[in-house]
Length: 403
Image (cartoon, rainbow, N blue to C red):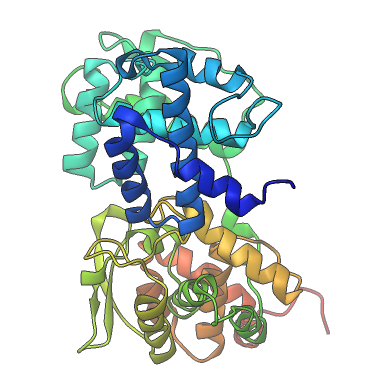
């Protein structure tokens, strides 16, 4: 009679891990702490025990484990006790074994493969990044990006105006704009340190991008409510996504604001939310009732049991906070697909624009909208006035020649 899958897994768990038995136990405990399900932990436990059994048969010491040993394990025709296989082990199984080997490397049990060395930034570039952090109030992501651009350009500090570097013409407009912005910032830094003449940053051309000439990309308030209603509140994912969508739709937050929100940013007594935006400016916004209730439901039902730290976490193991803006945009994109509505864009900014236009149409002034969206320039807020046709008709001048 063929061996059942339960009997097979039981046989793997009963395999003698030898000297690695304590480390296998520590490995499975580590995976449990990271939030992996019991079935997943059981699979990793079986793979680690199988590796330990094979090492004994192959007479390989634990200290000699490396990537080459993992490759040999992947190719071996398994005749290990307690395992019935006529073919080699699967790729998924090998990945589990490699994860156990990585764990051993993290504990210093085996020698880890050295990571490829990253290019060392120029000393001036490091000083440039410190200058951005201390004097310009720039976010760490921007500091890293500007530093990489400045390092790639390899600008001589003695005569930065003497170098002309040809750039490929197939770059996207956004990348070229970022590159010129970083170059201007670097030249301003050199000028402040007396390493080049003042005003040289004005020689870097501005890349035209007429964003304010078009209409804001938004959806109607009824469509926003339809998006929010797509969240299944019986699942952890639905509870989390509903909280994110409500914060985006009610307060016009950016995706980066969602990533940086921490438990200490919410004042439940005053019903306010503290947001740190561009330039490290901190703004305290009123927390609407429905958004606050959604955040409370997420904290109570879906958030991993982590003390302090960011509010929003990934829901698949290992436990880790949201770290990329694209994850927040994916939440919006998924809700749009579920709702079946037609939207001019699919990112998190869609709900930010929709919140601004809804406030204007509800009677809010441009100053109020600008304060909520934390705009530095009134021109950015005035961009949303284009959607208020009724207000525009009151100030529109007659076309020359009309009766």
